Image 1 (cartoon, rainbow, N blue to C red):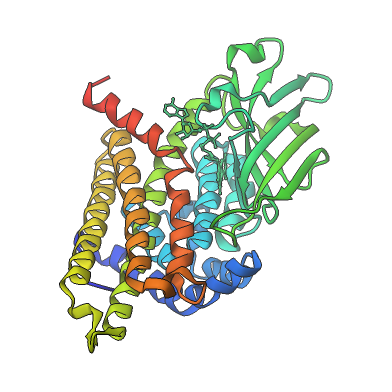
Image 2 (image 1 turned 45 degrees about the vertical axis):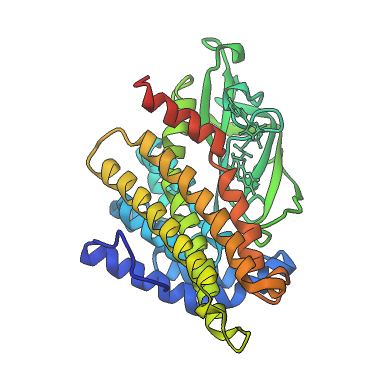
Length: 390
Ligand SMILES: Cc1cc2nc3c(=O)[nH]c(=O)nc-3n(C[C@H](O)[C@H](O)[C@H](O)COP(=O)(O)OP(=O)(O)OC[C@H]3O[C@@H](n4cnc5c(N)ncnc54)[C@H](O)[C@@H]3O)c2cc1C
């Protein structure tokens, strides 16, 4: 990697995980990334490799066959994986959102039923179904309902979710819905979450979205049409689902921020190598001060973003309220991913604008980090609340 890695005061275990994932990303993930992007196909072999390394159980507690990673370990693994492919890292982080929901909010039976397989084999692949066509930044406006049927002790889910990562390849979904039963009215925002196997009748996967970037990661809509799940599949009390979602997303933001750092670092590495090889005016362009200064700025952006990620991890591991720190890390790291990939293309000149060089894909992929798991505008709203102590 280009330059000394600021913020790398890691424990031996964290360093070992980083080295392991970096090696896997360089040897198994990066070489498949361009073709996976071009063909819009998720590399399932890579997923199986992640499972063999134990990474599909990264955030699953050891008691259920997982790695039980702390936030810093989770972040360094995400950064290293995204250095190889953001599409793969995104699929993993959404799988981890699902396993985290089961681990944190599930019953003992639910944990024992789902977590060991999801951790050890990576199957079923997890999905996290919060967003809807008319409820993105404000999920409280969701309209998916869960109507209780006392005769069968089941809930009937009805509604539509949008932008679901792992939509086609996923096997189990954490689905957020408003409960409609004797004690709750959907108008009361009685949101909860359910575990729904993808083969349940009435679970209908829509068409794959055609996207600017992250093209190897499948994103679909999912419709619930009288999709009946046992009451035992409910994860939280009605009314507690939205706060559970926000809690899970705050954890997830650290992962997305770390992934943005990984993409930015990859672009910086590519730009540095290209600048050393490309000659103009009878010398490598890396001798031109303008290019050197660009690389200096890019390197500083990457380091600053990584430090914000590490600070959010530190606060989380110290048991502090790290919501603002996670938002700062996501905001600044996604901004760095955009600017560093942009400059990496500039350093490549016309070649950078073609699919022949990885920086083109990195630039397209980077944009999503400013949108999902809370847009940049939403992160700034959270940070501003911190400024005013609200
Ligand atoms: C590739 C991809 C994968 C995704 N994966 C998942 C997934 O697995 N599961 C899932 O549940 N969701 C997923 N999402 C959804 C993602 O989290 C949402 O797209 C995101 O939260 C924004 O919601 P929206 O698209 O409806 O935009 P909107 O909420 O409609 O926002 C539109 C614009 O208005 C701004 N805006 C909205 N409200 C405010 C406000 N109060 N203050 C300031 N600005 C505001 C936004 O920042 C944005 O610029 C994914 C999205 C994509 C594109």
